[in-house]
Length: 480
Image (tube, rainbow, N blue to C red; front, side, top):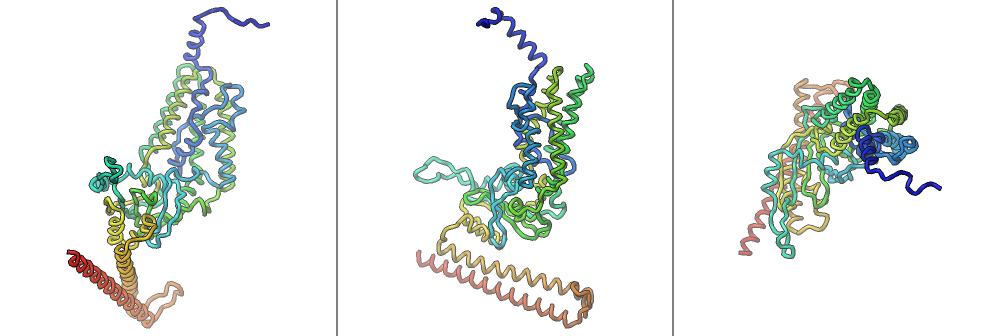
């Protein structure tokens, strides 16, 4: 029978074991494998899309504390190994690499039709989530003036509402930069810097003791990280949309949200409706080359982990390399970024806000026809007051007049361009034949009809507006 106390009473033995562990940790992976595969996935989604994706080398969480059994649990552990295996499953089964859905629930509203789409784009969700970070200074100053600091209601007296009812930020898609081409920032650059630091740490045991194993593991791990982020599939999924859109879009969290971001396409922006529904109607299915690449990368990650698990000396350096990667990847995964870092290049135009939502929507519609109307059903899904119905009817008339004016101007510009080419004939782009003066006259008549229609609609809208103002004045005088 084994003795109840197999060793004598010795207070020094635990100190010796602790000293040995701290001088050269023998189970370093139990400490290193702390970062989850979901964090790695989000860090990749933040930085991927270009030729270089500087996501740093780190580890995940081990389900077994035994080094000899570690490889048995590869499929159930977190980190790069788990991510590489999960990426194969996601790529083969779901045809995607990007994280499953945005981490900020939002909707995209078409700026003319008012059609609402539930956003499934990860980058659009991040753009809205980080708006407090990249909000222009003039918008922040204006928002502070609009913030309502009145008691919420009589029953909740003393409760202060430190927010505006609605704040509409209007941006115009920039024509100076290519949509879908992300700009590099400090978050991207930090991956290069941290990778260099990791290699520098790994060189220390190489230079001092001739132990090249940690340098080899670190260098090979960084290569695998960069190779995973360089897959073309990332770019196809992040910007799976049409370019040079001339439509207007509203990005918001929905009814009750404080912010609504309006993007005027102007023929330069990304199609937000395509982005918002890119998951549901994706045509960027992963190719067999992508799937094969992921399979090979997963095999290399498994081989690297098995090789690294046999380290017995200088493990503090590997702990420093992995710990630095853990901190960096966790920071990158949640770091706020600007729209241009996601390939959405915007130029600030105007900001409209106030403590009440309806006046803000009306002011937006007054300055940008159809845009305020498109948000009305989202923020006011119920029945409106009679005065509000009348006001929105007037806005509809003015919007129709505005559309007619744009159409007339487009036809007149086309007519002027054709007349500049030849005063009596023009080349038909469809048939390639020279059209006679009669065809040119048809275009002139169409432009004239469009101009007359625009004039009539503007007059109708102006008369309706004047009549409404007169009724308001008469009602006010009768009340007095």
